[in-house]
Image 1 (cartoon, rainbow, N blue to C red):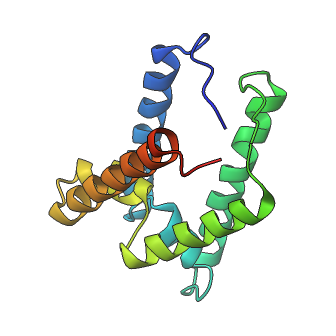
Image 2 (image 1 turned 30 degrees about the vertical axis):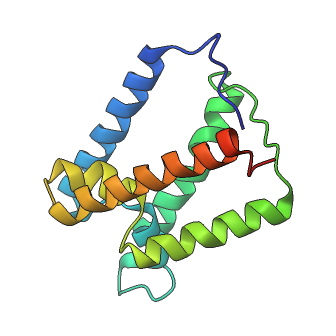
Length: 145
């Protein structure tokens, strides 16, 4: 997937980030829980009593929102230049990483840093360092497609 830098607008990025922050704040106020996607999804494996409904509604919203935005003409067409096997391996690695890191980028990066959690700040710095190293390895060294 590539970013269309010709039509990129920092205002859409700022607006999107503000919406994510607002959603995270409203979620913690309404549920008293961190809005981390891996924790919400993982909680469906062995849900506590009363957890199934809000978790499935949250995940349904994650799926429905981009579909509705696409229908409304707010999202460009996504193009993924990787094979299905690469996507599956990447997904499994992300799942393993969120388990190892006790949360995902949304939980640590958005909610944890906002709460000044040392664990979340450290985790986010590690996420970013490895993301930068991966892009460097794929583009500069040529380890990627």
